[in-house]
Image (tube, one colour):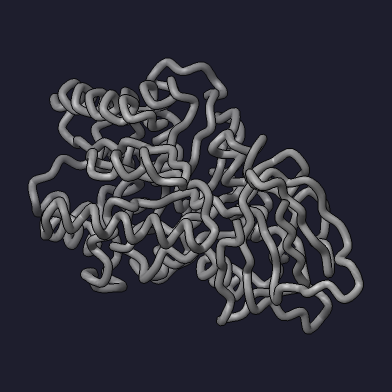
Length: 396
């Protein structure tokens, strides 16, 4: 049996954290019970939380750490990723991936929704203790390429599943795909019950869809790349229309993760709730600041009632894959959000999106969520907050 006690225990099964409390676990990590710490019991400084879930990551891009200029906007970022994607060897890419996944595990991340464009990560994921659902992301702006792209991603899916991985196709974003490919990849991916989609990441993306103008539009025209249709609507509304065009039932079943949503409006959120049976939002604030110095509209997201999850995006658009750094960024920008809610986003909601909430996401007897200690959580007003020195360490 294992026992850990701390100043706070965020079980995420009640409205408030437990103060000066313990968690007891069986040797295999199953939670046995929680309760008040005994008098004189040594308390860990900080807060015990369930293992975290990184709801959006491109781990295979970890070899790109430190290579990108910040503040270029999406058009500039896309130019950089196209120029640098093949800048290293396969061995170096796998070594960077190993370091990234080991780092996530050590900070107390137990599961990840990961984007893959190739097979580089498959063997490592198959043997790593970190659970991963792999979203096999597809691109292809030319309509005539749709069938070939889908044949390629289905072959990639067979490779992943042969290693025991949960993996299925997913569309990238409206601006990198023909309308036919958005529909085809979404319908194929939803056979697994899960989908991830980069949506409304920047004002540049919205300007391209609404008016056929702006830096991203000009970039594609200059490079001879087919452009998405100018719909006069948001990229979110366009995506939902492509799900409907795929012949999917309405509202669309499955766990559908809308990633970034930096331009989400109350009207867009209401439409997503109407169109999707189980929508989720993934915020990656440090990546958004890195690329275009903006943050997601958290007040709109909270008011929508759509569950919010937290991701790190990739080391091409972030300085680290530190989940607590993402939460600290959110806390400082939106101080009205209590720490209990932030941990719910980072732990329980991510587990729910992945369909793993029966095991992960909260500290409840019978579950095996893993435990992390988040350090430096002062409570000057009686309610704990993160500090700039906060970090997370795996306990079990």
